[in-house]
Each structure stands twice: as C-alpha cells, then as structure tokens.
Image 1: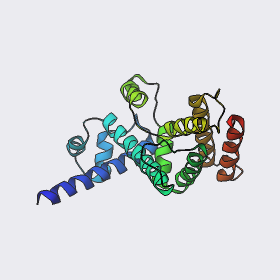
Image 2 (image 1 turned 45 degrees about the vertical axis):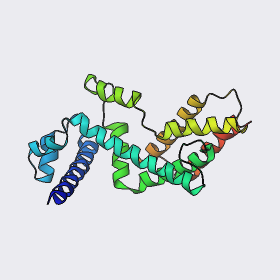
Image 3 (image 1 turned 180 degrees about the horizontal axis):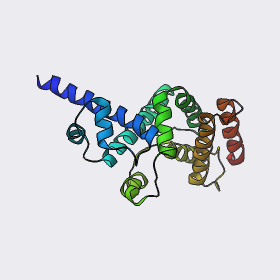
Length: 212
C-alpha cells in the first residue's frame, strides 16, 4: 500500500510539473499561479503546495529535470565511446554532435520546445523576484551544455588539438549562443535554411578558429 501511495505521489508530481510547464510557456511564469496549475489538473492549490513549497521550487524542478536529461545523454555518449564516467574523454566534436541531436529534439518535441521557450521568453530573469532562482542557476554545480563544451575544449587542448591560447569558457559561451539563437529562429519560423546543417557548419567554423 505504501509503495502504491509513493508511486501515486510521484505521478501527481510529474503531472503538476507537466501542467506548470505548459502554463509557464503559454501564459508566462509571472502570470501563472498555483491556482492555475491546480485547476488545470482538477487538484486543490494545497495539493500543489504539498509537492512544491513555492513557484520558484517548481521552476527549478523543471530545470533540474532537463539538466538530468542532458547528464544522461553525456553518460551515454561516453559509454558508447568506451570511456569512463569522469568526462575527461569528451571532445569538441562529440559535444557538438550531441547538441545537433538536441536541437532536433527541441524542434520536434512539444515538451522540449515548451521548456526552451519558457527559459528564453517567458521568465523575466532580471526581475527582483527571480534573484534567488538566478543565483541558484549561476552558482549550482549542475552539469549542462556550457560545462560540456568547456570541458571538451580543455580536453582537446590537453591532447594538442586546440591552441593553448584559446579561452575555453569564452568559446563554450559562443557555442551555446549559436545554438540558442538558431533554435530560437527555427521555432519562430525565421530560419530559412536547415537547422541541423546550419548548426553543423557553425560549429565547424568555430573548430577551425580554435584548432592547433
């Protein structure tokens, strides 16, 4: 009975997160309330509070879910290449290929597209109310695409494939900015060319600019 109760609680938590993601992406984070999330699922506001102490906690649960998904992708990438789990074997080209696949997932998956639009357009990160969430994202040790690119560039540098004067953090930031911009353009129907091909050529241009 206890196991069933735990499973039901996990299912309810997942339903709340899915409802919140849909509403955050459509109405905006600021304009969505716990009442909205609960009403969409025919739950009470108290039931939502039982799982999440605040709207900020609900947003961070969605963020953590996506970081965990990326973490599993990185683990699978290293397993497929026969390497260990510490990330030392990541390469620029391997991470770039993974980001190409993720770009395709975002534009083809309603859930991934909703999360992307939420983070890019529906959260007012500069607002005072978002300071705690923003601080958590900036200081937390979550391993995401930016860290993967940075680690890969540093690994390629150690292997003599990348110039020693390259700023790994700067290049990783550029790579993420390229990805964000092109995916956003594709979702907004402002990208006339193929997303995957354009990303591939962009990352190749970055590689040509940093290789030894």
